Image 1 (cartoon, rainbow, N blue to C red):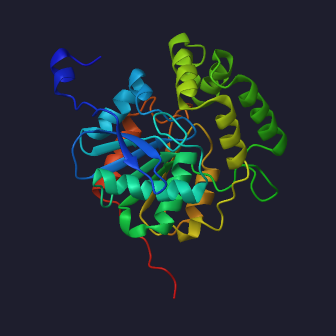
Image 2: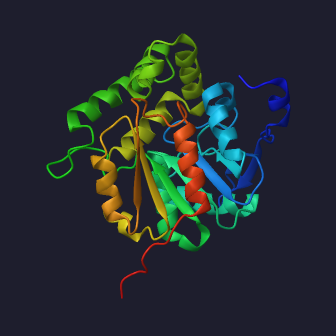
Length: 292
């Protein structure tokens, strides 16, 4: 726990603000800390810019980044405090451009986990001049396993998870399983489970979460990833590095950072990951120019 003096000197998140998408959808975001640099953060399929501050490990993780950067957290359309309905990948990319313009972030670093990172990768491929660097935790190239991609869930496993999500999204039993899978050190912790159940409910209703999950179950990013020509750091913890290295081989110049521990979620035991992200922002390196 921080001392009173430390608590009073920590950066504080702004009130929730909104950017406006091309179709008028309101895109919620909050800002904490001062830049440069700027860094956007997005965590996979959970998103609510107000609820995240209720969980101390997430708040401490974001404040750790904000000690040396301006951190921008945001809700994708149809999630959290944003309006509208779920969009496709092209819509998510267009929304990010409007968000960056609204917040005045010319070339931020992008740090996303799983789906959040995939959307950032698509944005970086389309608008490399607007991205200082991409950090992607839990990177993937396909959502479902195949003969040449053994790291993802099998079709049967993906279908089973989809059924569990459709039946249990926002419930404490589903949240308990979610926590046990992503942060074993927190398995069975009532406070953590209650937070994740609440975060799910505030992200979206069951139907939206189910549709979002099923849409991403079809994802194959093998053609997109070679077009990501910005400095890229892929971070991984809790799983073997095989999938991360496969993705890094597809992204020109990408580097992989493997962290010890069983918790996949980056905001638990976050010190080493925060240090790696700070080092990356200080010296992101270069990527080779496009061929031809």
